[in-house]
Image (cartoon, rainbow, N blue to C red; front, side, top):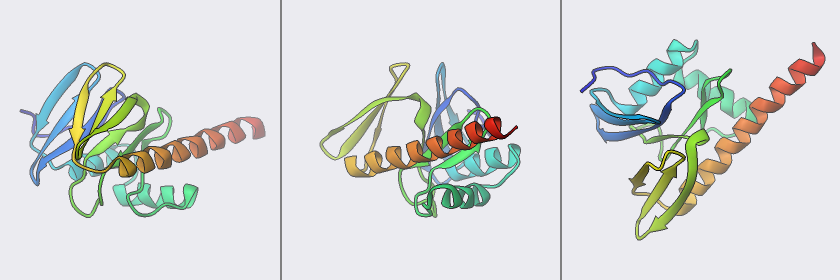
Length: 153
């Protein structure tokens, strides 16, 4: 078990176990971390030069979303995560880049990642679908800014 975790380019999902523990999925690994999911997000945002709140405000500025906002953890690698519930409490965080598909089975949503890993989240299909859409809008806005910077320079 790890006591600390920093989001990196391989991170696919951070799932809340309870208020003190999270389950982290990477492309080629899986960890239990003695850290709340929102604490992992906060520490990772700080490592990359901001805060979770700062990243939320950035999302609000870029796409007008301030509730359950997806966030850019790291800009140059386009590391974008979205929460599956309100972030006032510890939320599950999913990375947009690695999602292959998602589907509902009863009251559980299964998210399938590019590497074949499948996770189950108790939420509605509509919530996941909406969060994927918001994260995609954020990704598009970020790429648009990068493109306009290149043409200006």
